[in-house]
Length: 251
Image (cartoon, rainbow, N blue to C red; front, side):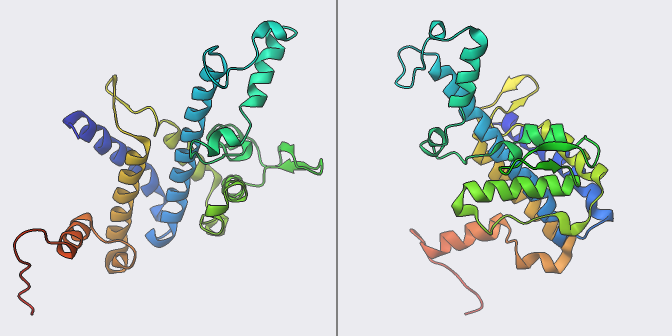
């Protein structure tokens, strides 16, 4: 990792943590970590999903590609053609074949950002039965996104923590959403320079940093769920010492 990438990750850590730490007055670290990490996860899967969509859209328009879509002249105008492309983008198999989490429309980050600023009681969409779904709170909107992702990705069922139980103000959650919106896990840029960091590397780094910060905030309790990277590295090396001897003064 070069110096520019390290600077980018440090700036990202500082920015996200300052936003997240505003919840400290309302919740202890054991609880607000679920809120923050849940939002980071939503942003990551949504970024990966949108990146896949952009890739597919380019391939749909490439005549030499296996998934080239019908040419525009086969449709009644450009509007119909664009609508056909958007509908094709919603085919789930395109994402599963690339090992990308399927993100339903109510769970996409663009939806969260757009709907979170609306007044409580605003009709957001209609459910499968044709009933109006109204905004109850920002925490409910986030929980609904997490639930929709679990429904569409069986491996995540029962894993994602809901946040409504923590009774956070809409304004505080909206502030987090706005801050995280300025972060991209798939197109990292620092001081005008595009970086070669992969989205999973950025996500892993942010998770590790946040868990460390939460452990510090919790004090002694933090060790129950966080082990510093240096300790993990030592344990791994001790499991398979390829050279030299392991010296343990306690034995």
